[in-house]
Structure formats: C-alpha cells, structure tokens
Length: 363
Image (cartoon, rainbow, N blue to C red):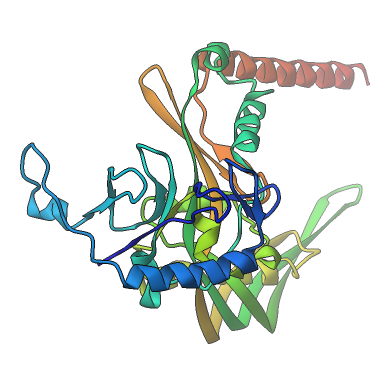
C-alpha cells in the first residue's frame, strides 16, 4: 500500500519545502537551508523508517457509500502531522495536507517502474506566476476591459507534469515537385514559361528527448505550447524536489504515447527537409519515406504553474512554464472591439486601394 512521507526540519521539526529561488530545500519556520545531497541521505532514512510502519488503513466516513468505479480511482491517506484525511486520485503523486498545509509525498506511487528518471526543478515561484498572469493581460486589444477588474485568480498551483521523452534516429527520403516561372513580352505578346523540376532529398536526423505529455488531465496542445523546456537543468529524480508541489503519475503509458511522438518526429523531419528546397515558385511534396531506428524512452517530470479564473460563469485555465516563465492560455473576446478593429483594417485597405486607383488615373 502506498505510504505517506513528509520531510521534517532537523532543526525545528517544521515541514520542509523546495525553494525554487535558491534551488535548495528550506524550512519556512526557522529559515534553515539544506543541500539536495543532504536530503538524499534523509530520503533513504525516511524510506527505511516508513518500511517499519504499519500500512495505512482505509476508513469509512459518514455519508453515502462510494461506488465501485469511484473507489477504483480514489486513495485515502492520513496526515502524520495533524491526522487529517487526504483524498486524491491514484494518479496524484505529491500534494499538501488540506488542513495543516504540510507538504507530503506519497512515495508508494513512485515505486518500481513508476519512478521518474529525471526532474526539472521549479525555477520560478508562485509570486512570479501571479505577476506573469497580470502582465499577460496587458496590451490585449480584444480583451473585454472589465475582465481585468472583475476577474480574480481562483486557484494557482505548481504541478510536476509527467512527460515521456523519446530518442530516435530517422532516415528520410523525400521527393518534391517544384516549378520556376519566367515571364517576358515583346511588342505583340506576353509570354510565360513554366519549368518543372523533380527534387530529391535524402539524409538522417537525430532526435533527443522529444516530449509527450503523459497525463490525460493536461491538454496536449496546452502542454506543447509551453515548450521548450531546457533539459540541461534536469537532474536525477529525488522525491525532495516534490515537497510543496503537486505531482501526477503518468496515466498515459509509453506505448500509448509512441504514436504522438512518431507524429511529432515525422512532422519535424518533413519540415527540416522542406526548408532545404528554396528558390522555386511552387513546391509540392510528392512522397515521403521515413524510417525510425535506435528508439529509446525515458520518464521525466516538468514544472508547470496552473492558474484558474472564473469570469461571468466561464472558467479559464492558464499555464506557465515553471522553468522559463513562458505563459499561455485562452482569454475571452470583446466581439464589439473585434468588429471595430476588423472594420478599421478594411477601411484602411479600401482607402489604400482608392488612392492607388486615383494615382493610376492621373498617369
């Protein structure tokens, strides 16, 4: 059964948290800082202590019975600090107690083949995420003006999102049809000559750590919009990095992610080869042969800040790369401002056409 693990400050007994600003674990009560190497030794000690404890027991609370399909996806833990009950789904790997707010880590969810290979620690804190959100709203011409004054952040949380990272070598053979057009004229006729070309490109491309979101809760397009993550700052996984943050175990397997990884690699390969065909009026891809080899996959956790706001009954979700600060999300549209903006563009284009025609008439 999964076990609950907390990092206690050896100095004062307070709950430790990973501090993104100093890249160390810090006690928020006595301000003592600890190197990750120290916590790694503490991690091993805590694991040994946890193995000596009794398994946590399931408890029933007053109310209606859980349905079988609900219980399959729910897990209940007891907080060792205050005794409160923590309910979460099986994909949740780390969280905080909702009563005493102590950071905890559910180590059992990371055992065996579920343990990540790497983690990119948070570089930016909650304050930076809030500032980025309000900065993101600036200069949005089509955003309703009252949105900035009426909206507020309902929830903000730092989440380690699971990613599968794929390596592969690609051998590609591409064939394109292209044209070049020549035009000239004499006193009697205008001439057009179109030359047709068959262009072939062959070569190999190596891909490293192509990311695919391993959580079904996170929209793939939202997560891909946060890329790139700088893998040079990745470190070998330690549970201490999760203290104070949420983390999800993957629920989309490596095998289920392979097709998306292959599609991303295929699209990138075609884009790279297409960029080498220049100087033509038109280029059409006629055939594409892409073969994969030396495939390899690893499992990593990437840092993401998630922010939710509600405005006039609609929920809006935003995300920030917890490493680089890249911010993405959808905003409501002021359609009145949109049509005024569109008409101003149309009016400007119409005025320009009228001016050109007037000048032409004078010649």
